[in-house]
Amino acid sequence: MKPYVMTALRNPLLWIVPAVLLPLLVAVGAVMTSRQVEVRASVWTQRSSLIDTPGVWLKVPAQTEADAFNERLGTESFQASILTAAGLDDRVQNGTWPGESSLASLLGKSALTKPLAGFFGGVSSGNVDSNHRRALDALKSSLKAVPQGDSLLYITYTGSDEATGIALVNGAVDVYQRETLGLSSADAQAVLDFYAKQVAEKQQVLEDQDANLRAFEAEHPAAVGSPRPPSEAQQLGQLQSIYNIRLSEYELAINRQGDAQVRAQAALTSSGADFQVVDPAHAPQGTTIKLRSAAMLTFVGIVFGVGLGGLLIVLRTWFDETVRRGEDVRRLLGLDLLAALPNLEKGGK
Image 1 (tube, rainbow, N blue to C red):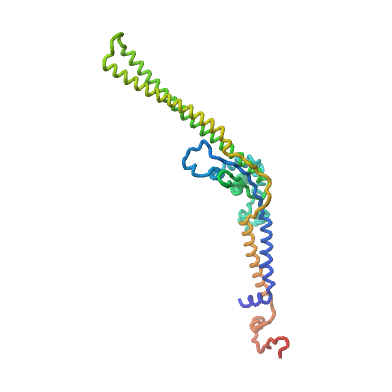
Image 2: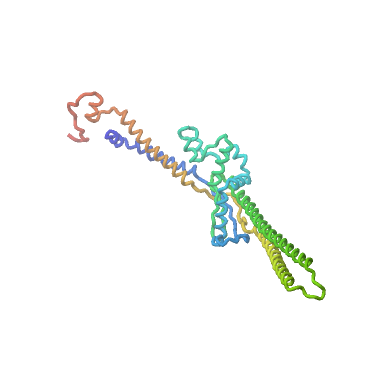
Protein backbone atom coordinates (compact mmCIF):
# COMPACT_ATOMS: atom_id res chain seq x y z
CA MET A 1 0.00 0.00 0.00
CA LYS A 2 2.89 2.33 0.78
CA PRO A 3 4.25 2.42 -2.82
CA TYR A 4 0.83 3.48 -4.12
CA VAL A 5 0.54 6.23 -1.52
CA MET A 6 4.02 7.50 -2.36
CA THR A 7 3.22 7.47 -6.09
CA ALA A 8 0.03 9.44 -5.41
CA LEU A 9 1.95 12.00 -3.36
CA ARG A 10 4.67 12.36 -6.00
CA ASN A 11 2.19 12.64 -8.86
CA PRO A 12 -0.88 14.46 -7.49
CA LEU A 13 -2.15 15.56 -10.91
CA LEU A 14 -2.26 11.91 -12.00
CA TRP A 15 -5.32 11.27 -9.82
CA ILE A 16 -6.63 14.78 -9.09
CA VAL A 17 -7.28 15.60 -12.76
CA PRO A 18 -9.54 12.57 -13.55
CA ALA A 19 -11.11 12.55 -10.07
CA VAL A 20 -12.18 16.20 -10.40
CA LEU A 21 -12.37 16.95 -14.11
CA LEU A 22 -14.34 13.87 -15.17
CA PRO A 23 -17.14 14.31 -12.56
CA LEU A 24 -17.29 18.00 -13.42
CA LEU A 25 -17.69 17.31 -17.13
CA VAL A 26 -20.27 14.59 -16.46
CA ALA A 27 -22.21 16.91 -14.12
CA VAL A 28 -22.33 19.62 -16.78
CA GLY A 29 -23.41 17.08 -19.39
CA ALA A 30 -26.01 15.65 -17.01
CA VAL A 31 -27.54 19.06 -16.45
CA MET A 32 -27.61 19.77 -20.18
CA THR A 33 -29.16 16.41 -21.10
CA SER A 34 -31.59 16.36 -18.16
CA ARG A 35 -33.33 19.61 -19.03
CA GLN A 36 -37.08 19.16 -19.29
CA VAL A 37 -40.00 21.35 -20.25
CA GLU A 38 -43.17 21.67 -18.20
CA VAL A 39 -46.41 22.10 -20.14
CA ARG A 40 -49.66 22.68 -18.29
CA ALA A 41 -53.30 23.55 -18.80
CA SER A 42 -55.32 25.50 -16.23
CA VAL A 43 -58.77 24.16 -15.41
CA TRP A 44 -61.51 25.74 -13.29
CA THR A 45 -63.54 23.21 -11.30
CA GLN A 46 -66.62 23.31 -9.11
CA ARG A 47 -68.68 20.80 -7.20
CA SER A 48 -70.89 18.71 -9.44
CA SER A 49 -74.61 18.81 -8.76
CA LEU A 50 -74.66 15.03 -9.22
CA ILE A 51 -72.40 14.45 -6.19
CA ASP A 52 -74.37 13.69 -3.06
CA THR A 53 -71.83 11.66 -1.05
CA PRO A 54 -71.21 13.47 2.30
CA GLY A 55 -67.49 12.59 2.44
CA VAL A 56 -66.84 14.15 -0.95
CA TRP A 57 -68.00 17.56 0.27
CA LEU A 58 -65.15 17.64 2.77
CA LYS A 59 -62.68 18.14 -0.11
CA VAL A 60 -62.37 21.29 -2.17
CA PRO A 61 -63.42 20.87 -5.84
CA ALA A 62 -59.86 21.14 -7.19
CA GLN A 63 -58.61 18.39 -4.87
CA THR A 64 -61.57 16.17 -5.74
CA GLU A 65 -60.95 16.51 -9.47
CA ALA A 66 -57.17 16.08 -9.05
CA ASP A 67 -57.67 12.84 -7.12
CA ALA A 68 -60.16 11.59 -9.72
CA PHE A 69 -57.85 12.48 -12.63
CA ASN A 70 -54.74 10.91 -11.09
CA GLU A 71 -56.64 7.78 -10.10
CA ARG A 72 -58.05 7.41 -13.60
CA LEU A 73 -54.58 7.99 -15.03
CA GLY A 74 -53.60 4.69 -13.41
CA THR A 75 -55.93 2.77 -15.75
CA GLU A 76 -54.67 1.52 -19.12
CA SER A 77 -57.91 2.41 -20.91
CA PHE A 78 -57.61 6.07 -19.89
CA GLN A 79 -53.92 6.13 -20.85
CA ALA A 80 -54.65 4.55 -24.23
CA SER A 81 -57.43 7.08 -24.88
CA ILE A 82 -55.01 9.94 -24.15
CA LEU A 83 -52.42 8.53 -26.59
CA THR A 84 -55.11 8.28 -29.26
CA ALA A 85 -56.39 11.81 -28.58
CA ALA A 86 -52.81 13.13 -28.79
CA GLY A 87 -52.23 11.36 -32.13
CA LEU A 88 -49.38 9.20 -30.85
CA ASP A 89 -50.66 5.72 -31.73
CA ASP A 90 -48.47 5.33 -34.84
CA ARG A 91 -45.35 6.61 -33.07
CA VAL A 92 -45.98 4.25 -30.17
CA GLN A 93 -46.37 1.22 -32.44
CA ASN A 94 -43.14 1.83 -34.33
CA GLY A 95 -41.26 2.65 -31.12
CA THR A 96 -40.39 6.29 -31.88
CA TRP A 97 -42.27 7.54 -28.80
CA PRO A 98 -41.16 7.87 -26.14
CA GLY A 99 -37.77 8.50 -27.70
CA GLU A 100 -34.55 7.17 -26.24
CA SER A 101 -32.15 9.47 -24.47
CA SER A 102 -28.63 9.59 -25.90
CA LEU A 103 -27.23 7.94 -22.77
CA ALA A 104 -29.87 5.19 -22.85
CA SER A 105 -29.10 4.52 -26.50
CA LEU A 106 -25.39 4.26 -25.73
CA LEU A 107 -25.91 1.96 -22.76
CA GLY A 108 -28.33 -0.20 -24.72
CA LYS A 109 -25.65 -1.16 -27.25
CA SER A 110 -23.77 -3.27 -24.70
CA ALA A 111 -25.18 -6.39 -23.09
CA LEU A 112 -23.33 -5.48 -19.89
CA THR A 113 -24.82 -2.01 -19.54
CA LYS A 114 -28.18 -2.63 -21.21
CA PRO A 115 -30.02 -3.14 -17.87
CA LEU A 116 -29.08 0.46 -16.98
CA ALA A 117 -30.63 1.81 -20.18
CA GLY A 118 -34.13 1.52 -18.75
CA PHE A 119 -33.21 3.83 -15.90
CA PHE A 120 -31.96 6.52 -18.26
CA GLY A 121 -34.82 6.54 -20.71
CA GLY A 122 -35.57 3.03 -21.89
CA VAL A 123 -34.79 1.25 -25.12
CA SER A 124 -37.28 0.76 -27.94
CA SER A 125 -37.79 -2.65 -29.45
CA GLY A 126 -39.49 -4.21 -32.43
CA ASN A 127 -42.21 -5.70 -30.23
CA VAL A 128 -45.44 -3.68 -30.46
CA ASP A 129 -46.68 -4.78 -27.04
CA SER A 130 -43.36 -3.84 -25.44
CA ASN A 131 -43.41 -0.42 -27.12
CA HIS A 132 -47.01 0.11 -26.02
CA ARG A 133 -46.16 -0.78 -22.42
CA ARG A 134 -43.17 1.57 -22.45
CA ALA A 135 -45.37 4.38 -23.80
CA LEU A 136 -48.00 3.84 -21.10
CA ASP A 137 -45.32 3.97 -18.40
CA ALA A 138 -43.87 7.16 -19.87
CA LEU A 139 -47.32 8.74 -20.08
CA LYS A 140 -48.17 7.88 -16.49
CA SER A 141 -44.89 9.30 -15.19
CA SER A 142 -45.07 12.51 -17.23
CA LEU A 143 -48.70 13.56 -16.62
CA LYS A 144 -50.37 14.55 -13.36
CA ALA A 145 -53.07 16.81 -11.94
CA VAL A 146 -52.10 19.32 -9.25
CA PRO A 147 -54.70 21.37 -7.32
CA GLN A 148 -54.03 25.07 -6.90
CA GLY A 149 -56.30 26.55 -4.26
CA ASP A 150 -59.97 25.59 -4.01
CA SER A 151 -61.08 25.60 -7.64
CA LEU A 152 -58.01 25.92 -9.87
CA LEU A 153 -56.41 22.75 -11.22
CA TYR A 154 -53.24 22.26 -13.28
CA ILE A 155 -52.90 19.34 -15.71
CA THR A 156 -49.12 19.19 -16.25
CA TYR A 157 -46.67 17.34 -18.48
CA THR A 158 -42.97 17.09 -17.65
CA GLY A 159 -40.65 15.80 -20.33
CA SER A 160 -38.24 16.66 -23.11
CA ASP A 161 -40.67 16.98 -26.05
CA GLU A 162 -42.51 20.29 -26.01
CA ALA A 163 -44.87 19.60 -28.92
CA THR A 164 -45.78 16.15 -27.61
CA GLY A 165 -46.37 17.61 -24.15
CA ILE A 166 -48.91 20.09 -25.52
CA ALA A 167 -50.71 17.32 -27.41
CA LEU A 168 -50.77 15.04 -24.36
CA VAL A 169 -52.09 17.70 -21.96
CA ASN A 170 -54.83 18.86 -24.32
CA GLY A 171 -55.68 15.24 -25.14
CA ALA A 172 -55.87 14.32 -21.45
CA VAL A 173 -58.20 17.23 -20.69
CA ASP A 174 -60.44 16.38 -23.64
CA VAL A 175 -60.66 12.67 -22.75
CA TYR A 176 -61.33 13.43 -19.08
CA GLN A 177 -64.11 15.87 -19.96
CA ARG A 178 -65.77 13.39 -22.31
CA GLU A 179 -65.53 10.50 -19.86
CA THR A 180 -66.75 12.64 -16.97
CA LEU A 181 -69.74 13.83 -18.99
CA GLY A 182 -70.42 10.23 -19.96
CA LEU A 183 -70.41 9.19 -16.31
CA SER A 184 -72.75 12.06 -15.46
CA SER A 185 -75.14 10.94 -18.19
CA ALA A 186 -74.95 7.34 -16.96
CA ASP A 187 -75.61 8.41 -13.37
CA ALA A 188 -78.56 10.55 -14.42
CA GLN A 189 -80.00 7.72 -16.52
CA ALA A 190 -79.59 5.28 -13.63
CA VAL A 191 -81.59 7.62 -11.38
CA LEU A 192 -84.33 7.97 -13.99
CA ASP A 193 -84.46 4.20 -14.51
CA PHE A 194 -84.78 3.66 -10.76
CA TYR A 195 -87.78 5.98 -10.42
CA ALA A 196 -89.38 4.64 -13.59
CA LYS A 197 -89.17 1.16 -12.08
CA GLN A 198 -90.71 2.45 -8.84
CA VAL A 199 -93.60 4.02 -10.75
CA ALA A 200 -94.21 0.83 -12.73
CA GLU A 201 -94.25 -1.28 -9.55
CA LYS A 202 -96.61 1.11 -7.73
CA GLN A 203 -98.90 1.23 -10.76
CA GLN A 204 -99.07 -2.56 -10.92
CA VAL A 205 -99.90 -2.80 -7.19
CA LEU A 206 -102.60 -0.13 -7.60
CA GLU A 207 -104.15 -1.94 -10.56
CA ASP A 208 -104.18 -5.23 -8.63
CA GLN A 209 -105.90 -3.57 -5.67
CA ASP A 210 -108.45 -1.92 -7.97
CA ALA A 211 -109.16 -5.32 -9.51
CA ASN A 212 -109.70 -6.83 -6.03
CA LEU A 213 -112.10 -4.02 -5.11
CA ARG A 214 -114.15 -4.41 -8.31
CA ALA A 215 -114.22 -8.20 -7.93
CA PHE A 216 -115.58 -7.91 -4.40
CA GLU A 217 -118.30 -5.45 -5.49
CA ALA A 218 -119.26 -7.77 -8.34
CA GLU A 219 -119.48 -10.79 -6.05
CA HIS A 220 -121.41 -8.88 -3.36
CA PRO A 221 -123.83 -6.53 -5.08
CA ALA A 222 -125.64 -4.11 -2.79
CA ALA A 223 -129.42 -4.29 -2.70
CA VAL A 224 -131.17 -1.10 -3.74
CA GLY A 225 -132.45 0.80 -0.75
CA SER A 226 -131.00 -1.59 1.85
CA PRO A 227 -127.65 -1.43 3.67
CA ARG A 228 -124.94 -4.06 3.26
CA PRO A 229 -124.45 -6.65 5.93
CA PRO A 230 -121.95 -5.49 8.57
CA SER A 231 -119.30 -8.08 7.55
CA GLU A 232 -119.50 -7.11 3.86
CA ALA A 233 -119.38 -3.42 4.70
CA GLN A 234 -116.29 -3.98 6.85
CA GLN A 235 -114.47 -5.94 4.10
CA LEU A 236 -115.40 -3.36 1.47
CA GLY A 237 -114.12 -0.57 3.72
CA GLN A 238 -110.80 -2.36 4.22
CA LEU A 239 -110.40 -2.89 0.47
CA GLN A 240 -111.21 0.76 -0.18
CA SER A 241 -108.67 1.93 2.43
CA ILE A 242 -105.95 -0.27 0.91
CA TYR A 243 -106.80 1.11 -2.53
CA ASN A 244 -106.47 4.68 -1.26
CA ILE A 245 -103.07 3.88 0.28
CA ARG A 246 -101.82 2.32 -2.98
CA LEU A 247 -103.12 5.33 -4.90
CA SER A 248 -101.17 7.70 -2.60
CA GLU A 249 -98.02 5.64 -3.04
CA TYR A 250 -98.41 5.71 -6.83
CA GLU A 251 -98.95 9.48 -6.90
CA LEU A 252 -95.87 9.98 -4.66
CA ALA A 253 -93.78 7.86 -7.01
CA ILE A 254 -95.02 9.93 -9.97
CA ASN A 255 -94.01 13.16 -8.19
CA ARG A 256 -90.58 11.80 -7.30
CA GLN A 257 -90.03 10.70 -10.89
CA GLY A 258 -90.85 14.20 -12.08
CA ASP A 259 -88.44 15.77 -9.59
CA ALA A 260 -85.70 13.32 -10.62
CA GLN A 261 -86.18 14.22 -14.29
CA VAL A 262 -85.81 17.92 -13.48
CA ARG A 263 -82.68 17.33 -11.36
CA ALA A 264 -81.11 15.03 -13.94
CA GLN A 265 -81.68 17.52 -16.73
CA ALA A 266 -80.21 20.33 -14.63
CA ALA A 267 -77.23 18.19 -13.70
CA LEU A 268 -76.51 17.27 -17.32
CA THR A 269 -76.86 20.89 -18.37
CA SER A 270 -74.41 22.11 -15.74
CA SER A 271 -71.98 19.16 -15.81
CA GLY A 272 -69.97 20.78 -18.58
CA ALA A 273 -69.33 23.73 -16.29
CA ASP A 274 -67.89 21.55 -13.53
CA PHE A 275 -64.60 21.20 -15.46
CA GLN A 276 -63.82 24.24 -17.62
CA VAL A 277 -60.48 24.83 -19.36
CA VAL A 278 -59.28 28.34 -18.51
CA ASP A 279 -55.87 28.19 -20.24
CA PRO A 280 -55.16 25.36 -22.72
CA ALA A 281 -51.67 23.88 -22.92
CA HIS A 282 -49.17 26.09 -24.74
CA ALA A 283 -45.43 26.39 -25.22
CA PRO A 284 -43.61 26.64 -21.85
CA GLN A 285 -41.67 29.73 -20.84
CA GLY A 286 -38.71 27.86 -19.31
CA THR A 287 -37.18 24.50 -18.54
CA THR A 288 -36.57 22.40 -15.44
CA ILE A 289 -33.87 19.90 -14.51
CA LYS A 290 -34.60 16.23 -14.00
CA LEU A 291 -32.78 16.03 -10.69
CA ARG A 292 -32.84 12.25 -10.39
CA SER A 293 -31.16 11.68 -13.73
CA ALA A 294 -28.67 14.53 -13.21
CA ALA A 295 -27.74 13.26 -9.74
CA MET A 296 -27.33 9.69 -10.99
CA LEU A 297 -25.12 10.77 -13.87
CA THR A 298 -23.00 12.93 -11.56
CA PHE A 299 -22.59 10.01 -9.15
CA VAL A 300 -21.51 7.76 -12.03
CA GLY A 301 -19.00 10.44 -13.08
CA ILE A 302 -17.55 10.61 -9.57
CA VAL A 303 -17.21 6.82 -9.39
CA PHE A 304 -15.52 6.59 -12.78
CA GLY A 305 -13.30 9.63 -12.06
CA VAL A 306 -12.06 8.26 -8.74
CA GLY A 307 -11.69 4.80 -10.26
CA LEU A 308 -9.72 6.13 -13.21
CA GLY A 309 -7.43 8.12 -10.90
CA GLY A 310 -6.81 5.05 -8.76
CA LEU A 311 -6.13 2.94 -11.84
CA LEU A 312 -3.57 5.44 -13.10
CA ILE A 313 -1.82 5.41 -9.71
CA VAL A 314 -1.66 1.60 -9.75
CA LEU A 315 -0.33 1.49 -13.32
CA ARG A 316 2.20 4.21 -12.62
CA THR A 317 3.44 2.29 -9.58
CA TRP A 318 3.67 -1.01 -11.43
CA PHE A 319 5.63 0.38 -14.37
CA ASP A 320 7.88 2.66 -12.32
CA GLU A 321 11.40 1.10 -12.22
CA THR A 322 13.07 4.04 -10.54
CA VAL A 323 15.31 3.00 -7.62
CA ARG A 324 14.48 5.12 -4.59
CA ARG A 325 14.80 2.78 -1.59
CA GLY A 326 16.80 -0.23 -0.51
CA GLU A 327 13.73 -2.36 -1.01
CA ASP A 328 13.72 -1.38 -4.70
CA VAL A 329 17.29 -2.74 -5.11
CA ARG A 330 16.41 -6.05 -3.50
CA ARG A 331 13.16 -6.24 -5.54
CA LEU A 332 14.72 -5.45 -8.91
CA LEU A 333 18.23 -7.03 -8.58
CA GLY A 334 17.81 -9.55 -5.83
CA LEU A 335 20.91 -8.17 -4.05
CA ASP A 336 21.40 -6.71 -0.62
CA LEU A 337 22.16 -3.01 -0.41
CA LEU A 338 25.67 -2.31 0.94
CA ALA A 339 25.45 1.45 1.37
CA ALA A 340 23.16 4.42 0.61
CA LEU A 341 23.96 8.11 0.26
CA PRO A 342 21.70 10.43 2.18
CA ASN A 343 19.37 12.78 0.28
CA LEU A 344 21.05 16.13 0.85
CA GLU A 345 19.00 19.26 0.37
CA LYS A 346 20.28 21.88 -2.03
CA GLY A 347 23.11 23.77 -0.34
CA GLY A 348 23.66 21.04 2.27
CA LYS A 349 27.04 19.43 3.15
